Image 1 (cartoon, helix red, strand yellow):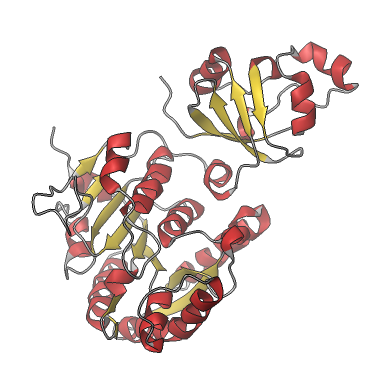
Image 2: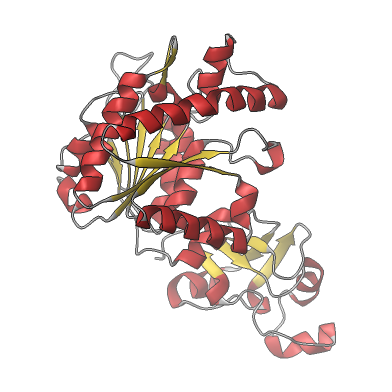
Length: 379
Protein backbone atom coordinates (compact mmCIF):
# COMPACT_ATOMS: atom_id res chain seq x y z
CA UNK A 1 0.00 0.00 0.00
CA UNK A 2 1.34 3.40 -1.00
CA UNK A 3 2.18 5.79 1.80
CA UNK A 4 0.87 9.34 1.54
CA UNK A 5 3.96 11.32 2.53
CA UNK A 6 2.01 14.58 2.56
CA UNK A 7 -0.17 13.34 5.43
CA UNK A 8 2.87 13.14 7.72
CA UNK A 9 3.84 16.79 7.22
CA UNK A 10 0.35 18.29 7.11
CA UNK A 11 -0.33 20.17 10.34
CA UNK A 12 3.26 19.83 11.54
CA UNK A 13 4.31 22.76 13.72
CA UNK A 14 7.73 22.03 15.23
CA UNK A 15 10.53 20.18 13.42
CA UNK A 16 14.03 19.09 14.40
CA UNK A 17 16.58 19.04 11.56
CA UNK A 18 19.77 17.11 12.25
CA UNK A 19 22.70 17.70 9.89
CA UNK A 20 25.60 15.24 9.74
CA UNK A 21 29.31 15.98 9.54
CA UNK A 22 29.66 14.64 6.00
CA UNK A 23 27.04 17.13 4.81
CA UNK A 24 28.64 20.09 6.58
CA UNK A 25 32.28 19.48 5.66
CA UNK A 26 34.32 18.85 2.53
CA UNK A 27 37.97 18.36 1.63
CA UNK A 28 39.09 21.89 2.49
CA UNK A 29 36.84 22.57 5.49
CA UNK A 30 33.20 23.57 5.93
CA UNK A 31 30.82 22.97 3.03
CA UNK A 32 29.50 26.51 2.80
CA UNK A 33 27.40 25.70 -0.27
CA UNK A 34 25.49 23.00 1.65
CA UNK A 35 25.10 25.23 4.72
CA UNK A 36 23.71 28.02 2.56
CA UNK A 37 21.31 25.71 0.73
CA UNK A 38 19.97 24.19 3.94
CA UNK A 39 19.63 27.58 5.64
CA UNK A 40 17.69 28.93 2.63
CA UNK A 41 15.20 26.07 2.83
CA UNK A 42 14.87 26.37 6.61
CA UNK A 43 14.21 30.11 6.39
CA UNK A 44 11.50 29.48 3.79
CA UNK A 45 9.89 26.90 6.10
CA UNK A 46 10.09 29.26 9.09
CA UNK A 47 8.51 32.03 7.04
CA UNK A 48 5.75 29.54 6.24
CA UNK A 49 4.95 29.14 9.93
CA UNK A 50 7.17 26.26 11.10
CA UNK A 51 9.38 26.25 14.19
CA UNK A 52 12.73 24.62 13.41
CA UNK A 53 15.56 23.59 15.71
CA UNK A 54 18.90 22.50 14.25
CA UNK A 55 21.00 19.72 15.73
CA UNK A 56 24.34 20.19 14.05
CA UNK A 57 27.36 17.99 13.80
CA UNK A 58 30.48 19.35 12.14
CA UNK A 59 32.44 21.09 14.90
CA UNK A 60 34.93 18.28 15.38
CA UNK A 61 35.12 17.54 11.66
CA UNK A 62 35.72 21.22 10.91
CA UNK A 63 38.41 21.39 13.58
CA UNK A 64 40.12 18.25 12.27
CA UNK A 65 40.35 19.79 8.80
CA UNK A 66 41.42 23.19 10.12
CA UNK A 67 44.22 21.67 12.19
CA UNK A 68 45.26 19.40 9.34
CA UNK A 69 44.73 16.02 11.02
CA UNK A 70 44.34 13.06 8.69
CA UNK A 71 41.46 11.45 10.59
CA UNK A 72 39.28 11.72 13.68
CA UNK A 73 41.56 11.27 16.73
CA UNK A 74 41.05 8.29 19.02
CA UNK A 75 42.02 10.18 22.19
CA UNK A 76 39.27 12.13 23.95
CA UNK A 77 41.44 15.23 24.70
CA UNK A 78 42.33 15.54 21.01
CA UNK A 79 38.69 15.16 19.95
CA UNK A 80 37.71 17.80 22.51
CA UNK A 81 40.44 20.13 21.27
CA UNK A 82 39.44 19.62 17.64
CA UNK A 83 35.82 20.45 18.50
CA UNK A 84 36.97 23.60 20.32
CA UNK A 85 38.85 24.72 17.19
CA UNK A 86 35.97 23.93 14.84
CA UNK A 87 32.96 25.22 16.79
CA UNK A 88 33.51 28.99 16.30
CA UNK A 89 33.86 28.64 12.53
CA UNK A 90 30.78 26.44 12.34
CA UNK A 91 28.65 28.94 14.23
CA UNK A 92 30.04 31.83 12.16
CA UNK A 93 28.98 29.98 9.00
CA UNK A 94 25.46 29.54 10.37
CA UNK A 95 25.38 33.18 11.49
CA UNK A 96 26.23 34.36 7.98
CA UNK A 97 23.96 31.88 6.21
CA UNK A 98 20.86 32.72 8.24
CA UNK A 99 21.77 36.41 8.38
CA UNK A 100 21.15 36.63 4.64
CA UNK A 101 17.45 36.23 5.51
CA UNK A 102 17.48 38.41 8.65
CA UNK A 103 17.36 35.34 10.91
CA UNK A 104 19.34 35.12 14.13
CA UNK A 105 20.92 31.91 15.45
CA UNK A 106 21.81 30.78 18.96
CA UNK A 107 24.41 28.22 20.01
CA UNK A 108 23.41 25.64 22.63
CA UNK A 109 25.86 22.96 23.79
CA UNK A 110 24.49 20.01 25.79
CA UNK A 111 25.63 16.78 27.42
CA UNK A 112 23.56 13.71 28.20
CA UNK A 113 24.23 14.32 31.89
CA UNK A 114 22.38 17.61 31.59
CA UNK A 115 19.28 15.94 30.16
CA UNK A 116 19.23 13.08 32.67
CA UNK A 117 18.42 15.47 35.53
CA UNK A 118 14.78 16.51 35.44
CA UNK A 119 15.43 20.14 36.49
CA UNK A 120 18.16 20.64 33.88
CA UNK A 121 16.01 18.89 31.29
CA UNK A 122 13.19 21.36 31.93
CA UNK A 123 15.61 24.31 31.99
CA UNK A 124 16.96 23.31 28.56
CA UNK A 125 13.42 23.03 27.24
CA UNK A 126 12.44 26.44 28.62
CA UNK A 127 15.51 28.03 27.03
CA UNK A 128 14.63 26.53 23.66
CA UNK A 129 11.00 27.65 23.98
CA UNK A 130 12.23 31.19 24.67
CA UNK A 131 14.54 31.19 21.63
CA UNK A 132 11.70 30.00 19.41
CA UNK A 133 9.40 32.70 20.81
CA UNK A 134 12.06 35.24 19.82
CA UNK A 135 12.16 33.69 16.33
CA UNK A 136 15.80 32.73 16.84
CA UNK A 137 17.02 29.48 15.26
CA UNK A 138 18.64 27.27 17.95
CA UNK A 139 21.73 25.36 16.81
CA UNK A 140 22.45 22.47 19.18
CA UNK A 141 25.54 20.30 19.40
CA UNK A 142 26.99 17.95 21.96
CA UNK A 143 29.42 19.78 24.21
CA UNK A 144 32.43 17.85 22.92
CA UNK A 145 34.91 20.13 24.66
CA UNK A 146 33.91 19.01 28.16
CA UNK A 147 32.18 15.66 27.71
CA UNK A 148 33.89 12.40 28.62
CA UNK A 149 32.99 8.84 27.65
CA UNK A 150 30.65 8.33 30.60
CA UNK A 151 28.44 11.32 29.67
CA UNK A 152 28.77 11.43 25.88
CA UNK A 153 25.65 11.08 23.79
CA UNK A 154 27.86 8.96 21.54
CA UNK A 155 26.57 10.63 18.40
CA UNK A 156 24.32 13.48 17.37
CA UNK A 157 21.66 11.10 16.03
CA UNK A 158 20.89 10.14 19.62
CA UNK A 159 21.05 13.80 20.66
CA UNK A 160 18.63 14.76 17.88
CA UNK A 161 16.16 12.11 19.05
CA UNK A 162 16.38 13.39 22.63
CA UNK A 163 15.82 16.98 21.51
CA UNK A 164 12.81 15.88 19.44
CA UNK A 165 11.32 14.30 22.56
CA UNK A 166 12.38 17.17 24.82
CA UNK A 167 10.59 19.72 22.67
CA UNK A 168 7.48 17.66 21.82
CA UNK A 169 8.44 18.12 18.18
CA UNK A 170 6.30 16.66 15.41
CA UNK A 171 9.06 15.36 13.15
CA UNK A 172 12.80 14.65 12.93
CA UNK A 173 14.53 15.07 9.59
CA UNK A 174 18.00 13.49 9.66
CA UNK A 175 20.17 14.82 6.84
CA UNK A 176 23.14 12.73 5.80
CA UNK A 177 25.32 12.27 2.70
CA UNK A 178 23.32 9.39 1.13
CA UNK A 179 19.70 9.15 0.01
CA UNK A 180 18.41 7.15 2.99
CA UNK A 181 18.48 3.57 4.25
CA UNK A 182 19.52 0.99 1.68
CA UNK A 183 19.44 -2.81 1.77
CA UNK A 184 23.22 -2.68 1.20
CA UNK A 185 25.89 -0.04 1.61
CA UNK A 186 25.44 2.08 -1.57
CA UNK A 187 29.04 3.21 -1.34
CA UNK A 188 30.29 -0.31 -2.00
CA UNK A 189 27.35 -2.14 -3.66
CA UNK A 190 26.12 -0.99 -7.07
CA UNK A 191 22.90 -2.99 -6.69
CA UNK A 192 21.90 -1.39 -3.37
CA UNK A 193 18.20 -0.48 -3.23
CA UNK A 194 16.70 2.41 -1.28
CA UNK A 195 14.09 1.46 1.32
CA UNK A 196 11.45 4.16 0.97
CA UNK A 197 9.33 3.37 4.03
CA UNK A 198 9.91 1.47 7.27
CA UNK A 199 6.85 0.52 9.31
CA UNK A 200 8.63 -1.79 11.77
CA UNK A 201 12.28 -1.58 12.78
CA UNK A 202 13.08 -5.27 12.67
CA UNK A 203 16.36 -7.11 13.06
CA UNK A 204 16.68 -7.19 9.27
CA UNK A 205 16.38 -3.39 9.13
CA UNK A 206 19.11 -3.06 11.75
CA UNK A 207 21.23 -5.52 9.76
CA UNK A 208 20.81 -3.40 6.62
CA UNK A 209 22.06 -0.38 8.51
CA UNK A 210 25.21 -2.10 9.69
CA UNK A 211 27.63 -0.04 11.68
CA UNK A 212 29.62 1.92 9.12
CA UNK A 213 30.34 5.46 10.36
CA UNK A 214 31.50 8.19 8.05
CA UNK A 215 35.15 9.18 8.08
CA UNK A 216 34.48 12.26 10.19
CA UNK A 217 31.30 11.49 12.16
CA UNK A 218 30.66 9.23 15.14
CA UNK A 219 27.27 7.94 14.04
CA UNK A 220 26.74 5.60 11.09
CA UNK A 221 23.46 4.44 9.63
CA UNK A 222 22.88 2.12 12.59
CA UNK A 223 22.86 5.05 15.01
CA UNK A 224 20.20 6.70 12.84
CA UNK A 225 18.10 3.53 12.99
CA UNK A 226 18.42 3.50 16.79
CA UNK A 227 17.27 7.13 16.87
CA UNK A 228 14.29 6.23 14.67
CA UNK A 229 13.46 3.35 16.99
CA UNK A 230 13.22 5.73 19.96
CA UNK A 231 11.05 8.19 18.11
CA UNK A 232 8.67 5.77 16.43
CA UNK A 233 8.07 4.01 19.76
CA UNK A 234 7.16 7.44 21.16
CA UNK A 235 4.78 8.11 18.25
CA UNK A 236 6.96 10.50 16.22
CA UNK A 237 7.96 9.99 12.54
CA UNK A 238 11.49 10.45 11.22
CA UNK A 239 13.05 10.75 7.77
CA UNK A 240 16.64 9.99 6.77
CA UNK A 241 17.43 11.95 3.59
CA UNK A 242 20.26 13.43 1.56
CA UNK A 243 21.29 16.85 2.85
CA UNK A 244 23.63 17.48 -0.09
CA UNK A 245 20.70 17.93 -2.45
CA UNK A 246 19.56 21.53 -2.66
CA UNK A 247 15.82 20.84 -2.44
CA UNK A 248 15.50 18.01 0.10
CA UNK A 249 13.76 19.89 2.92
CA UNK A 250 11.43 21.76 0.58
CA UNK A 251 10.58 18.52 -1.19
CA UNK A 252 9.80 16.69 2.04
CA UNK A 253 7.24 19.34 3.00
CA UNK A 254 5.76 19.17 -0.50
CA UNK A 255 5.08 15.47 0.11
CA UNK A 256 7.79 14.23 -2.26
CA UNK A 257 9.44 10.86 -1.61
CA UNK A 258 12.84 11.95 -0.37
CA UNK A 259 14.80 9.46 1.71
CA UNK A 260 13.46 6.81 4.09
CA UNK A 261 10.36 7.53 6.16
CA UNK A 262 9.99 5.74 9.51
CA UNK A 263 6.34 5.38 10.44
CA UNK A 264 5.45 5.86 14.14
CA UNK A 265 4.07 2.70 15.71
CA UNK A 266 1.56 4.06 18.21
CA UNK A 267 0.20 7.10 20.02
CA UNK A 268 2.66 9.65 21.35
CA UNK A 269 4.14 9.25 24.81
CA UNK A 270 3.67 12.19 27.21
CA UNK A 271 6.76 14.35 27.64
CA UNK A 272 7.62 13.06 31.12
CA UNK A 273 7.42 9.44 29.99
CA UNK A 274 9.69 10.27 27.04
CA UNK A 275 12.21 11.61 29.55
CA UNK A 276 12.00 8.42 31.60
CA UNK A 277 12.25 6.16 28.56
CA UNK A 278 15.01 7.84 26.60
CA UNK A 279 16.92 10.46 28.63
CA UNK A 280 17.68 8.36 31.71
CA UNK A 281 20.29 5.62 31.85
CA UNK A 282 18.81 2.47 33.43
CA UNK A 283 20.63 1.30 36.55
CA UNK A 284 19.39 -2.28 36.44
CA UNK A 285 16.89 -4.78 35.03
CA UNK A 286 13.71 -6.23 36.50
CA UNK A 287 12.40 -9.40 34.83
CA UNK A 288 8.69 -10.12 35.02
CA UNK A 289 6.51 -13.13 34.27
CA UNK A 290 4.06 -13.41 31.38
CA UNK A 291 1.09 -12.30 33.47
CA UNK A 292 2.80 -9.13 34.65
CA UNK A 293 4.00 -8.31 31.13
CA UNK A 294 0.47 -8.69 29.80
CA UNK A 295 -0.98 -6.54 32.62
CA UNK A 296 1.53 -3.75 31.90
CA UNK A 297 1.29 -3.86 28.12
CA UNK A 298 -2.39 -4.50 27.56
CA UNK A 299 -4.22 -3.40 30.69
CA UNK A 300 -2.27 -0.33 31.79
CA UNK A 301 -1.36 -1.80 35.16
CA UNK A 302 1.48 -0.96 37.54
CA UNK A 303 4.24 -3.47 38.31
CA UNK A 304 3.55 -5.35 41.55
CA UNK A 305 6.08 -7.56 43.38
CA UNK A 306 4.06 -10.71 42.62
CA UNK A 307 4.98 -10.53 38.93
CA UNK A 308 8.74 -10.13 39.42
CA UNK A 309 10.86 -13.22 38.70
CA UNK A 310 14.37 -11.75 38.66
CA UNK A 311 16.51 -8.69 39.20
CA UNK A 312 19.91 -7.54 37.91
CA UNK A 313 22.09 -4.70 39.16
CA UNK A 314 22.19 -2.56 42.28
CA UNK A 315 20.12 0.60 42.53
CA UNK A 316 18.31 2.79 45.01
CA UNK A 317 14.74 3.96 45.37
CA UNK A 318 13.70 6.24 42.50
CA UNK A 319 16.28 4.87 40.06
CA UNK A 320 15.39 4.25 36.39
CA UNK A 321 15.24 0.52 35.65
CA UNK A 322 14.59 -1.50 32.50
CA UNK A 323 11.68 -3.95 32.73
CA UNK A 324 11.86 -7.03 30.54
CA UNK A 325 9.84 -10.22 30.15
CA UNK A 326 11.27 -13.56 31.17
CA UNK A 327 12.02 -14.17 27.47
CA UNK A 328 14.23 -11.04 27.45
CA UNK A 329 11.84 -8.75 25.57
CA UNK A 330 12.35 -5.19 26.81
CA UNK A 331 8.95 -3.77 27.80
CA UNK A 332 10.02 -0.31 28.92
CA UNK A 333 11.66 1.81 31.60
CA UNK A 334 10.31 2.90 34.97
CA UNK A 335 11.24 4.62 38.22
CA UNK A 336 11.27 2.16 41.11
CA UNK A 337 9.64 2.69 44.50
CA UNK A 338 12.03 0.24 46.18
CA UNK A 339 15.77 -0.39 46.13
CA UNK A 340 17.22 -3.46 44.43
CA UNK A 341 17.90 -4.96 47.88
CA UNK A 342 14.27 -4.64 48.92
CA UNK A 343 12.94 -5.81 45.56
CA UNK A 344 15.04 -8.96 45.90
CA UNK A 345 13.31 -9.61 49.23
CA UNK A 346 9.74 -9.03 48.04
CA UNK A 347 9.79 -10.37 44.47
CA UNK A 348 7.05 -12.92 43.94
CA UNK A 349 5.09 -11.79 47.01
CA UNK A 350 1.56 -10.40 47.21
CA UNK A 351 1.34 -6.74 48.21
CA UNK A 352 -0.20 -7.76 51.54
CA UNK A 353 3.05 -9.57 52.37
CA UNK A 354 5.42 -6.62 51.80
CA UNK A 355 5.16 -5.23 55.33
CA UNK A 356 5.82 -8.62 56.91
CA UNK A 357 8.98 -9.06 54.82
CA UNK A 358 10.34 -5.49 55.02
CA UNK A 359 8.79 -4.21 58.24
CA UNK A 360 7.10 -1.41 56.33
CA UNK A 361 5.03 -0.96 53.15
CA UNK A 362 5.36 2.56 51.74
CA UNK A 363 4.01 1.46 48.32
CA UNK A 364 1.96 -1.37 46.85
CA UNK A 365 3.66 -0.95 43.47
CA UNK A 366 7.31 -1.58 42.67
CA UNK A 367 6.80 0.74 39.67
CA UNK A 368 3.64 2.82 39.37
CA UNK A 369 2.18 3.06 35.88
CA UNK A 370 2.50 6.87 36.00
CA UNK A 371 6.28 6.39 36.29
CA UNK A 372 6.54 3.72 33.60
CA UNK A 373 7.14 4.26 29.88
CA UNK A 374 6.29 1.38 27.56
CA UNK A 375 8.60 1.18 24.54
CA UNK A 376 7.15 -1.85 22.72
CA UNK A 377 3.77 -2.34 21.10
CA UNK A 378 1.00 -4.03 23.04
CA UNK A 379 -0.65 -7.11 21.53
